[in-house]
Image 1 (cartoon, one colour):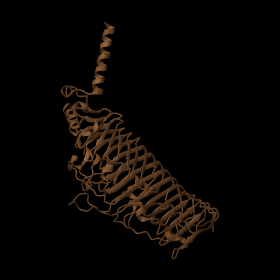
Image 2: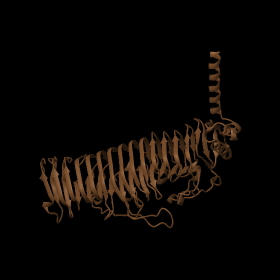
Image 3: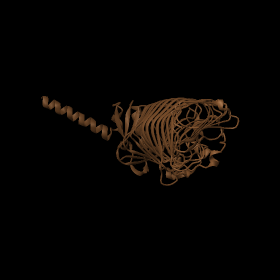
Image 4: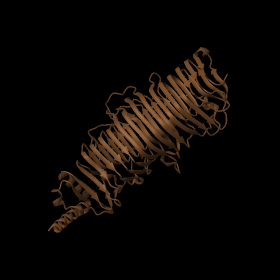
Length: 542
């Protein structure tokens, strides 16, 4: 009897497992709150030609009506227009299953969410949509293909996202392959408790092909993802009156013809308490894509141009390859309201940022920049353990450029062209610390390695440079700098001048530097008194 009982238990388990894998009927599914709802049992053909939108929606509705459930896509190709995901429902795409987006724009109704944001100007359609739902997800090793190649026009409108979730809670996106969106691949707007893990995104089919956009969301975990996109890859935005905050991003491999890791463009609500770590960026491409470049724009881009506050941001352990500018930090004043009728925002706040353990190679000639605006400084930025290799090629004309402020323009590193420094150009900053910075120049360049312009409370500790050929300029230029401590630096061989002081620079102290390989240690511009500099315990130099 004992053997029979055990056998019955085994048969029951097998029966339940088969029901889960192959789907319950519509009549019995509602009796099981944890049932699996096979889309084929609701009329999906899976032939890749017949529109299965209605059948998929029926399965979602049945799972929701049952209290909870998984909508299962067995291996096949399911052509669909917009489907609406509902609370307590997960879409599970089995390996070999493809959810294929329709190329007929009439299959995507315009849906205007209650949470209004600047993205209302872009898109109101999506393949998979959810609003104010809880406990939802998309899982499995199947593929979602947006067929974006059929939507290759630049204008906004009538190009759907693949995924758009608005004001949803407890969202889980895991392991799914995503391809070829007509617009951004996925936008999570004003969502709480969002987990994105193990997804694989390739998005090079048309304009605005972002990998992922986390927008006005709170409590977000993103990990172990692969993404390569024609537009921005891992993107944090704040297009509405709510901050994107409490975000952790880790263990991702990324590539982008634009910005691989980006925080900003739209910034109304701001960004707070965000950690990004352990990521690899490789943005090299064969071909120039939709924006005309074969290198990415930036590796890491932090931007505040539409009001809001950016604070308490850490970025660490990042390798960068194949971009024009490795780092771009920008406070601007475009002051664009997030919705019509809303008062223009004031100048934002950009403070408390730590960036560490960065290696960047195969770069362009643009250099890195930290740019505030007059009267509104970026505050308290620390860069440490940075190693970068630049190609050289800058001219004396580049070195003498007066960089335009462009405070009301779209923020992008390439907008400023070649900077007056081949390594770092920093302007309108208060509280800037650079520690263990190692820069190498692979060809001749007539620009200084670093220029600090209108900077207060500067601390440079342990900066070294290496050049294949000497240039005719200073290693470091201070212009209108107030209070600077420079120590532990080592210029390259035959550096003409280690440090040049210009404008209203004062309160500069230089200690413990090896200046034995420079032709001249210090140079003073017109009107700068020698009393602006105190130096001691330096080796060599004149």
